[in-house]
Amino acid sequence: MDRGQTSEAERALRAGNVYLMAAALGLGAWFHNGDRPSLAAKLGLGPDERVLFAQTVGHPSEVGSHRALRERPPREERRSRADRRAPR
Image (cartoon, rainbow, N blue to C red; front, side, top):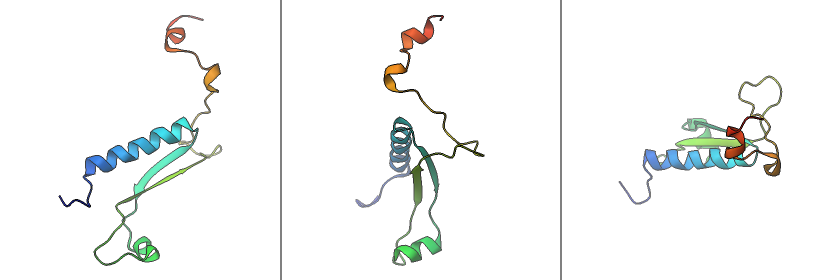
């Protein structure tokens, strides 16, 4: 592997970290195929360059989306693990 390249595992770990950060911020994230000739052209990439993937992060849709994230209460209102195990 060349020094400038990343392995599939490394790319997957980076994408996973983006998902975790988005969730922590109450945002949604979507990992999708960015390997499209039209995108490469818009970005002005050379013939030996390509986009491997893209990741969109933003506020999830509240209406009509099965992927919308549930809203989380503020940290101070969340129950601890021990409290969740105990009956209310």
